[in-house]
Image (cartoon, rainbow, N blue to C red; front, side, top):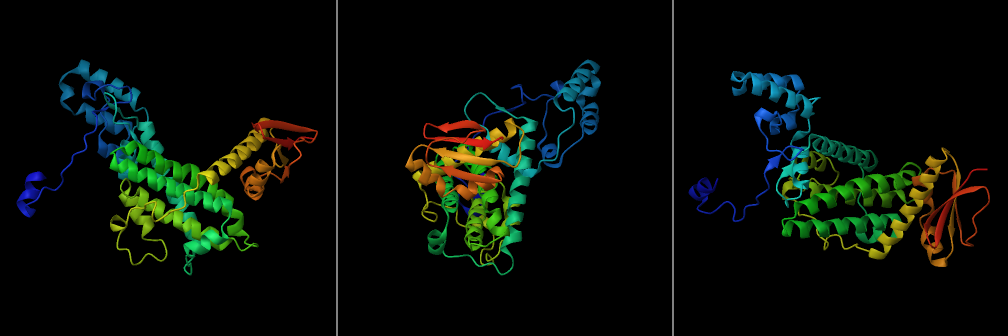
Length: 357
């Protein structure tokens, strides 16, 4: 590549080279045919059955040594009892970039590769959900209008987006791809899919308060920027999804779109993130009590012993109800827990309770 670049352009095609560790099997052993632990990247991308792997091994140079062949076949059956599922190029690339470059080797685990294939599916489904609510006549609200009419949960996801863009840019600058992939996955999985998509479903399906337009605009901003954040690791998936977003006909490809920065999304708000973390702890506490006592539709109470905590959680009352699927959620500022309830402590100033009687 270097010689061809110099020959054709007179310039070096690149000036820096990123070296990774030796790729080993999940147990930290060097890959060897005699151990039956070799992972072919093509097999990860396209998938392969155990029988096909075994047949390939039988036709390799080990066929002349029955002892080694038997050991290799046994090792292969132990390492890949169900073969290798199809994970695709994007899933493989993203998985490899998640591994820490510190240490003596990169222990490649097939189960982890499958995990990132599922992550690709989650992104696909999240964007597909967005498509159904954008529609052909979707018009993105201005950022000023979004911020003026947004709820706390809307501003929280935009703050998370800004924070993720900051981490990604810093990680790329330091060649710390592990940090970048971890931040992107956390934003898509834990923030956007697990929290924000769930909290905006009532406003999208039953828009009585008029907050649906804001939710759609914020969701579009998060999906569009989230795909750009992910593009260097999953170019095929992100290109396919990005080209279908409304209003982006002027962008020929996501590959040439500007990478998100904090200047583009100046929404970072540490106080708001801490407040939302408290709300999420409250929601987790209520869900935990529901699972512990095996109840579904319950009346939940959030008991606050300080006015500060009470005022913070008041802006999230509907979100708590949505995330917990409770019949009702009542915030109490008197610090007194109703009788007949199971109780869980969230902090020194907040407890949650679900009514059992």
